[in-house]
Image (cartoon, rainbow, N blue to C red):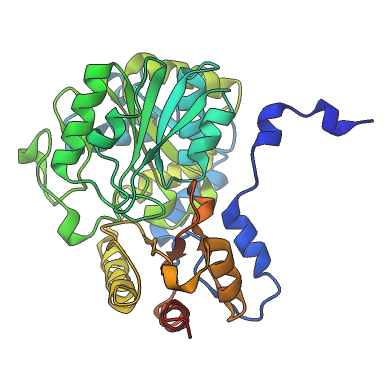
Length: 400
């Protein structure tokens, strides 16, 4: 049988994840310094583990509603009302939902693409981008339109407007971002929302790293600032009426260290959420039921100490690398996206190979971009590993 003849064009057009490829290249290294994987290195809180274990032992192991268990729906409705001033009366009471719990934020992104994009429609994504964004177009036979955000990785209204055409259905913004760790300002969030409203385009705000927003990037300007008890991550969802124009995507894996649980959620325009729930019924069915009970407990966890530790590591990265390469200081997430000095005469893949020769695993910039002039490092690693990796990088970037 000629299997290749049977494969779809969309899957053949997609390459494998460059992040996984970098990991495979270093698989034979002995005790490598691995700065390639974006996975928190702190353990899941005991209370969160116990809640999931209790649900398993209580035989809460069957399917849940496709939109998520009512108890988690109610807690998310409460959280988003406090954070954004959004009203979720139906979700909180267990009725029809404005919120969907998904298998990871990736599940939410795929469902959003399936619910909005027809063949030939356009989706505007940042360049550099999270690796799933171009695939959202491939999976729906839509067209990705790359918004050049170099050198600062900022997805601004001025840049995005040049990319919008009559075929544009969606604009994706990721702040704090992967791979650059860049956080949009309040004004940039407002301008981007205003642009999408004028153009009748859905603004998808991917905020998987919302809690990983460092001190200088946080703000108290929100839809209902009197409700804010702490500084918040700037977001287009914070402005009045944003729930009619913004699809907010957030998750649990990064913030609470349980990436393997695959739990995320989306909230926004009711008619869109309804279609995403319908699609979930025929695809993922539901997010893992017992782990949703763990997610309820996660919402009570204070991650301040972990965030402070990651900010300290961010400072280490900037202090070490800023003198030897072009680096926009990350305002959030746990990545840096330094430029490879032109004097080295290397592209990202060549730089990756040189790093592997020194027992260091990175990801080349071409994994996240149409150009291969940078590399991504993750500082979600113990401090001693980060120090060792930075020492190697300083030498490599200096041409030693």
